[in-house]
Length: 193
Image (cartoon, rainbow, N blue to C red):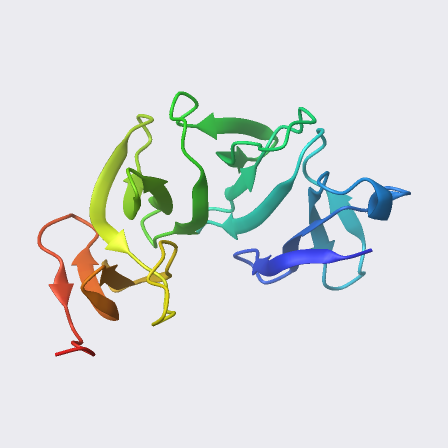
């Protein structure tokens, strides 16, 4: 069986959370992965999700809550990628009315959830609030390919800030930071200047 993506540590360091499609015949019917808890002491795997569709990109928060991306497989050519949080046994879809694909859920030390999503031709970084809202931190998050400044990019949360790759049609990706509280984006590098 394949493991999809990066494993996420539990806060106590006793287990990992991974995404894998462990069904018989998965190679002939892809797109139905689940999240699994892997006990480090025993190797035992316990399913954390169980539905038709891909559950992937787990991020374990400081309190043990698991944020992840999921899509309901309706046998269509395109499936919207939703953001979910599993707290104990309860699963909640975050921002169920927003018709955007989410990327890279990342917890802050204060248990806020930072996500990337595409909107209006640009990739944005935002905090998903516990009231089901997005508080945009930055736009123009971009890829690292100099020949193709497409959306996507990457980001990292730490020290009360988010560092990310900032781009536009006028310059390749640079490194920028923004506070988790919002405020001005500060461009740290100028590779094309």
